[in-house]
Structures are given as C-alpha cells and as structure tokens.
Amino acid sequence: MASHKYFLHCYFYRYLSALLIFLFITTVNAIDLRVKGPPSVVLQVKSGRTTGHHSQLQVSSALGLWCQAVNGKTFEVVPAQEITFRHHSQVHETQMENEGQNATYTKETVVLADAGVWTCEVKTKLGNATGDISVFLRPVVVSNSSLRFDDHDSSNYHFDASGLTMIRGENCRLECPVFGYPKPEIKWKYQDKQIQQSARISIKDGVLTIKNVTDTDDGNYVCTATNSFKHKGQMQQSEVVVERRLRVKSELAWVTPLCIILVIVMLLVATIVLCEFRKKRNERKLILVETAEDD
Image (cartoon, rainbow, N blue to C red; front, side, top):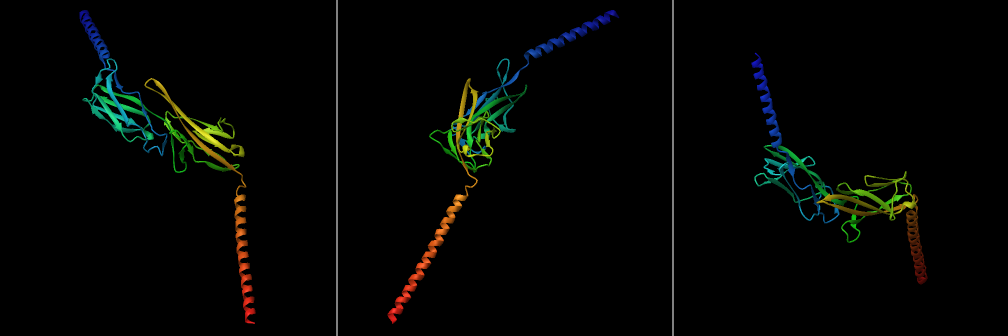
C-alpha cells in the first residue's frame, strides 16, 4: 500500500514538473506580436486656408501610411492575414504586399478630417495587434459663407477676415475658426496688446466675447493660433494669424443718415416746386405777350 502511494506521488510530481517545464518553454518562445510603422506623419499644406472640414486641402503630397506585424522580441516580420486602418470609426482597406509582410494605404484627396490618430489593425495566425499613427496638421483657417478671408500679405498663413460692426452696448463675438492637430492654442491681441480676460471680456474655444461694447473696443483684433508636435525626433511649431476689424457705432447712428435723406427729399421737393413756379410764370408771360399783339 505504501509503495502504491509512493508511486502515485512520484507520478504526480513528474507530471507537474513536465507541465511547468512546458509552460516555461511556451512562455519563453511565445511571440510578443506588435505593429510596426511610422509613429507620425505630417500633412504638408501649401495654403493655410480651406473652405470646410471635408473640402480638399492643398497638400504637396498624398497621405501615405504603412504598417506590418512583427515579433516584439526578435523584431522579425510576421506575415499577416489582414491589415486595415481605422480612423474616426471608419475602416480603410490597405494594399497588402510581400505575401502579407506589410500593407500600405494612400489617400490622394486629403481633407481636414484626415488629421488625427489612425489605428493599424493587424490579424495573423498567431493573434491580433494594433498600433497608432498620428497624422499631424499645422493650423489652417476654415472659411464659410458668413466669414471671408483675404490674404494679408505674401504669406500663406496671415489673413484679414471680414470686419464686424456693432452698436454701442451690444454684445460682440469675434470668431477665429482654426483647425489643426494637435488642437491649436488660440490667443487674441487688441491694438498689439495681449487681451486679458475679465468679467466683460472672455475667450472660450477660440471665440472672443465682449459684453456691452464701448467706443474703446473699436479697433483691430488679431487672433494667433499655434500648435506644436514632435516628428522624427524634432519639435515643429506652426502658426496662422487672422486679423479682424471691429467698428462700434452709437445707438443713435441711424439719425445722421435719416437727416441726410430728409434733406435730400426736401431739396428735391423744393426743386420741383421752383420748376413748377417758373413754368407757370413763363406761361403767364406768354399769354400777356400774345394778348398785346392781338390788340
């Protein structure tokens, strides 16, 4: 009986040792599946102005992304069964190359919405993995039907936006519609001085709000949008500048044009009356002359 128990104990420990050795070898030889690709891509724009988030950007080259599956321990390429890119919940198919060793994605028509984080999703026989690629974009202004932008000078990133006229005592909102990735930091200046927020003046999401405008608020306002990011080991910083003119009028500003209109109307009436008076006087003279000739 004792020998039987001894045999069972030996068998159990041998089985347990073999299992532990197997698990150890499996763990050591397990593939740490990872995704390899460029950590970031920069959209090189030619102009700092566009007409909407889904309007085509003027870029020097198409958006190009690539990625592949690798063993995180040996960095050897692992052939993939499927590789896709995901951006804003939308899946984009890729072009598989070298029997699944890598995949590329090219987008010729680039829009503002293409900036941001793209996720490479890889499926292999050994498992799945994901990796992110940041698509950076310097700040650009986004024009619309109510806000026009004109070039301030020869620079492609300095603009004059359409001005705004307010009546004294009204609340004013000056917008600076700028987009970029990472999200740009927006600062406002008035007459070349940094604007300090107060109970009457506030800045939120790039919008400058001035309550109860006065004559002292009349002038030129400058919005500067800046973002920075690290690409290929170097920090890059870019900015775009927008200038807007605010004109403040008196609440009685309508009186002057009304007076001008009234004066014009009065002069017109006086002219008509004078012409009629002269016409009748000439007719009266003509009748007197004809009567004298008849006599």
